[in-house]
Length: 417
Ligand SMILES: Cc1cc2nc3c(=O)[nH]c(=O)nc-3n(C[C@H](O)[C@H](O)[C@H](O)COP(=O)(O)OP(=O)(O)OC[C@H]3O[C@@H](n4cnc5c(N)ncnc54)[C@H](O)[C@@H]3O)c2cc1C
Image (cartoon, rainbow, N blue to C red; front, side, top):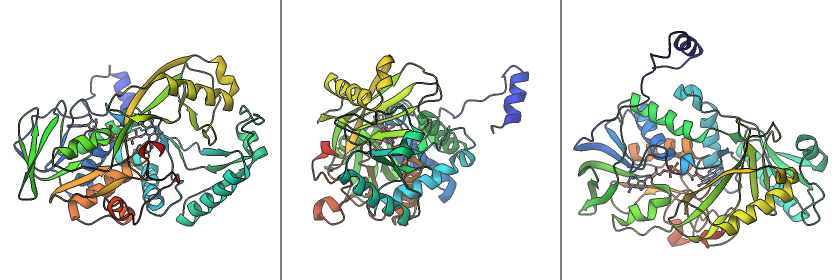
């Protein structure tokens, strides 16, 4: 079933009777070439690219809940490629390029909106860091633009430019950055994978990973054992728990990150804007809600809900940056479980167990990675070699200390990234 304007018109005129379900609901087979644990954005994208680019279709995605019910459906939908350090910068650059043609590739409206991101700076030190970062982004081949205070004011006149503590000096802008509709991305990849023969199996929690003589042989699930030549983790916030089923300890702590959405408002914020000093990121959805978030809740937890101190902090910074928001009502808030690494950067690598692959450590930034992660992970699983854009996303950097990608410069404490 392909989507097109004609199709929408025809269905509209004929009672919408011709739409088919987006994917099948198959029973799990006894054996697959590849089993992917986790039906979030990364697991589904990996399945899609395994089938679409490598012709590997005897694949199952095992999801303990429903497809897209994890972080992929809970994030603030920001997509960007404005990283500073080698390793991250080429990977996210690769991912943003895939985003730009994703809707055509999937024949699915993911509401990709390249509305631009502006990272505000408030003092000389932050400005110098923004200049350095901007130069690194441009050297990587992506776009970055330094805006002075008046240029920011023209784009976002509603900001509080003269806050006593955080006067706005300017911003670093990436015009190709923006937002996408998070759950539509999961649905688009799911539909694309299903169309190519991948089995998407919901309500199928993986409860064990079978390993014999250092080699993976399959998984135990709530719907029975499934054999597999290769098993690929894509369980995001649950990565440590799933890896522990194979006896592995990952350098990951799980923390809650909350998000908030206001009641629908008339168009106010045209871009994604981040507030470096108080830490806030905000954009406006197509429905009019202001979508925003700030720090992690700072202690480790698997509860997908947040706590009031961080709610209070987020509201404070939001009102400090956009005073007009104080008049709006908050509609909803929710939380997701973040897989935090000690350097704040991800892992896409072999594990020490043959046939078991790792995709984790996405921290609060894995939505923008979704197509890139699926693409390079599928390459790793299919060829057993890392993709050129992901050569530095290695697990052993946390043993050797070589190649750490500490974007924030906050050291080895998971909750500070
Ligand atoms: C509030 C919030 C805001 C965010 N904002 C942004 C943002 O603006 N930009 C950005 O780039 N990123 C953002 N992120 C991060 C991003 O959402 C995640 O890094 C990314 O979605 C993680 O990858 P995923 O989509 O595969 O995860 P998930 O969707 O969480 O997928 C993992 C899946 O694995 C399943 N699973 C776990 N254990 C098992 C098991 N044993 N058996 C079977 N299945 C299992 C889970 O049920 C889940 O569906 C945000 C996250 C949150 C929570």
